[in-house]
Length: 628
Image (cartoon, rainbow, N blue to C red; front, side, top):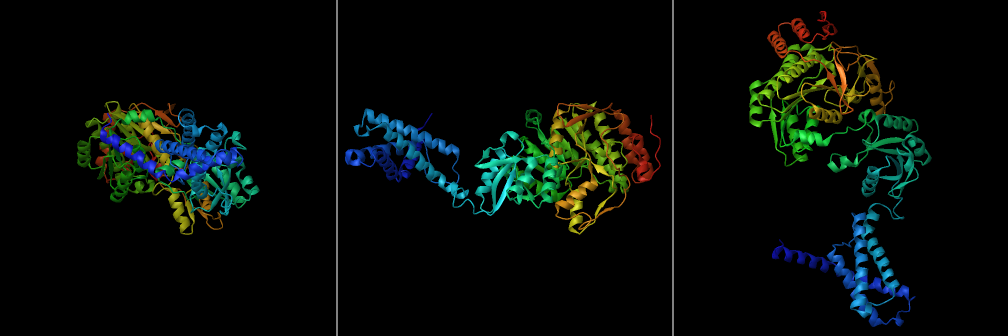
């Protein structure tokens, strides 16, 4: 029910808008007189000045009333949109009909040839529309005198809605020196079309030739719009002809505020990028369903990205667990800025500390757990095998048991392709954790799943940041072996698929992510050198230092007795195998923990009893024959 106070406030607001519109009266009067002048070819004496004055005042009053009532803003603005101009057209059209109606019913002075009102309608629309748009035309350099002030012509690769939106953003940004002269498209049907008045000049595959023919020295690629293969081809073609390629943030990144509009250099992530992950949002929303979510290893590369991705699903609470105090500090700040209303609980804690973990679970009562905490450096774990057992295998067992005791709905453990036919302590300990979680799933109402994938680009301590650091120091870039290959995913892609796999799991699955084709580490090193503006072998050398203990030349996707089964998601498969007996797995882990630091050989041999495919000879130890 509308109260008298609300009605008074609404009427007062409309009166204020009407008052602000009074300066328009002379404009509307002038437009109506101009319409008469055009209709009667300047012979206004025949009409009569008294008639013209009354008609102009009544017409102007009707227009002013309707513009105020419909909230039509006639001030010039840099932010005027097509929607604003449509609203203006509606107001002008409605006022013209009302003027005609008033003339025939009440005010004889308004009775005039219909062409007068038609011209009045057209002139009002053009003049007020021009006033509204002038600031934007100036801002976007669309007036002829301003159009060529920008000295650097560029081409945008990506003729779509995002490209047109970014075109407008570039035009508005006075800090950018680029002038967009054309688009390159992926869709042949767009050839010859225009976006925002800028022509589509050709296909993305022809970018370099188009740039040369239009004397363009810089090409802009929109982040996330093109496959890594396409980006690589454009970069290599343009490099040969002296054309610079840079990357613009996607429109979504600009909306989120995670990037500014300034073009950046092409990165290795752009060259290795694959098609975006398609998430089943309805499945994820129903799975999370206002549950408290707990993420271990939350300050790490994968854990922190999982946290960022989870925010969009509005959990009731996000519980962050990690040993890194500094990492937790910055992550908490970021999450709170992304979701100010989200309940965020932050713990600086060791996942191997049983009493601490039990207290956190008891206090926070998580519904879903993402276990991403684990050591990851192969060579360090080779020299610290007991710590690998404690941090990777025992911590996973501990958290899985506590989740069962606290009736957690789902437990998602992050694993690695190094767990497949492992040759390192790190990989073998991960495989042992997989076996325990899979065995426990058969005896618990909690849905335990494991998600296995390869390397992620640009994670802390991984090969890409190491290469960059070596380039900053003048080289050389060190590669273990010329034939070494690895699977790579971007951090957001891996994190999104982990969450999707968790939602799909019914309990006991080991999910394997589609990681594409393996990447040559030598090729990766060469790409990073070239992207740094240097030449391989001249400015920076690549040096082969030999394979280290526990390392493989090639990572594998599945164990001999596993079957890969497709799922409803094209990038997620299941490595199907029979779970081991929980009591036996638990007994073998207890043996490992009891050995402690006593004997590296004994620890490895005990681990091989649990993980028969563990090849201890890769670390220089004699391997036992695998059990049948």
